[in-house]
Length: 408
Image: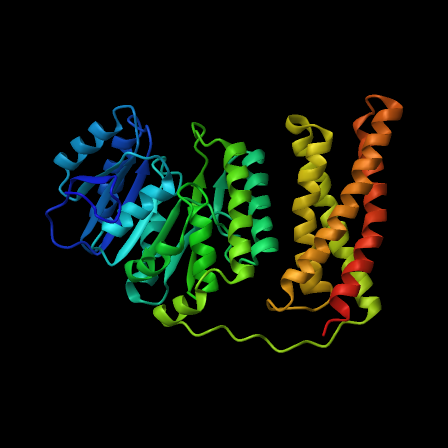
C-alpha cells in the first residue's frame, strides 16, 4: 500500500486490530540495535497502562543498515505495530508521512532512545483525548522535570529556547524534546504549512500552532541523555538558525495564512492586554541593573563554556547573541512594563542594534588585549570583558529606553 500524500513513503505492514485511538510514531534512521528493545518496551507499557486501542508506527527514513528488517519482524510479532518506509532522510519528513497516513484521532511521537520516561505518555495525550488541548509537548525545562545530561547540552538547549523567545516570541518552554502529541484534525491543518523536513520541524509546528491561537499543553518529564546520540550539533544549530530566519520572515511579511488557520481550527484571535502605566526612571534603573547583572553572569558562564571548543571570538559572539536576545525580552517586560506583541519586532531590532554595539566593544577589547599581551590569563580576559560589557550596558539602557519608554 502506498501513501498518496507522500509518494516515497511505503507502508510495509499495518495493524489489523480495532481502530486505534492513539498512534505513536517512532522515527528511525539506522537504529537496528535500539529499535527492537524500544518498540517492545513501548508496546508493553501501552498494553499495561493505556486504556484504549493503540498502534505503534515505526517510520524508517532511509536507513541503510538492518533497521527496516528489524521493524518488519516487530510488525509480524506484535499486531499493534506497523512500519512506514521512506526513501528520503529527515525526521520531520518521517513524522509528516506517518501522521498524514494514520487514521488515529490522536498522534504522537517519541525518540527511539526512550530518553523520556514513558510514565509521562498518558498525561501527554490525555488533554488531547478529552479535547481540552490541541497539542502537547514534554518539557525538560519545567521546575518539576528531572533531567540528567551534560553541561554542554544543557547550555545549548536553554540557549536555543531563549533565542526562540527573543526572536519568535514563543511561549512554550521546550521546542526540541522528542516527546510530543497532536490531535489529527489539528495536524491536518498545520502540516501543509510546515516546510522543514529535519530537526526544525518541531519548532516550526509549535510556532505555527501558537500563532494560530491553539492550546499547547506542557508535561514535565523525567529525561536521561542518551550518550550514544548521533545528532550533529553544529549542523543542526545552523539548520535551526536558517529555519528561525525563514519562519520569522514569513510571519513578518504575512506570507503564512494564519488568519485562515484560526478560522479553520475554530480559534479566535488572542486579545491584546491593556496598556500598563510606564514605570518611573528610578525603578527602571533598578530593574535594568538587576536584569543587567543576571545577563552579565549568564554571558560569562556561556563564554567560559564555549571558550574551549570554539575560541575566544566565536565564544564571545555566541554568548553575547544569546544573552542580548534574552536581555531585550526581560527588559521589555520587567524594566519598561511592555507586554503583548505590539511593536515587538521593532523593539528587538533596537535590541539587536545594542547587541551590535556590544559586540563591537567586547570584540574590540578582546582583540586589543590579545594584540598587546599575546595569550592573556583567563582572569584578565574576563576582567576586560566585564569592563566592555559595562560600557555596552550604558548604551543598551539608553537605546532601549528610547525605544520602549516613549512608545506610542
